[in-house]
Length: 339
Image (cartoon, rainbow, N blue to C red; front, side):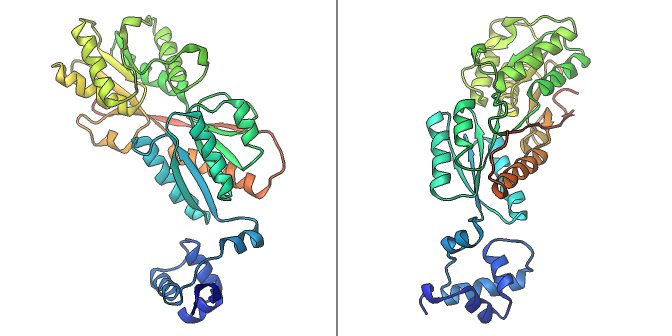
């Protein structure tokens, strides 16, 4: 029988289940036990059934698919973020299409356009360069939630990390551990940009130093062009080679912290005995590195849950309304690199 002739009812009869059960299986819902799921999938294969997405869209107004656009899947944080979004979206009955945007606004704009062209129900975009004006325009074309660090006001729904607060807590922890010369490991970002991850975390670092009566010494800023392990390792080795004394390092991300620890080892310094190091993000590797990495742990599950909640609200109610900004809670995780 040709697939164009096969209906969901035909699959249900072949599998000996209800059409609702078939619908749950083909839409990826997890409410069906494994044996029945296998039986339905075998019936789908045998019958040649193909889901008619267009018919579903006409019937329900939705496709059951949302988009997720992140800068780089090779980055541990964004890889873990994607996994969390896929898992939590499945519980809500959605599939997730993932793509990466790199560091260019054109690619972020293309991600929105592609999501609209493919008729995704909505899009979660981890934005690095998208500005408020573009966000306001895009928000009118597709349900959209941004994960990013720029100030968007009420232009779009926006979920952010506790950047300044987290970096402040990280720096304060090193002060409490007795550090007096605390370096800042991050790529440079022009302060004319006003708000992004680097500047907001730098602000928290500076505030904590000021609270402790310590100065922000420019010589303690690790020279690095990119927030990568390689650049961090090279930068921290240069600080040591130049004779700059320091006893603590606040890294802008866990990835940078891993690079710092490698560079310190190459330079003959021990962590935490000679230098204490703390990161930001609490990626899975942080608990398993040697030494294990102290870090700031934003509530990633809360961020994903909040993003999906905002997005599904927009999908169900497309009427215009101001965007909302939600800031994630966080915890300080103390591990071997500072203890």
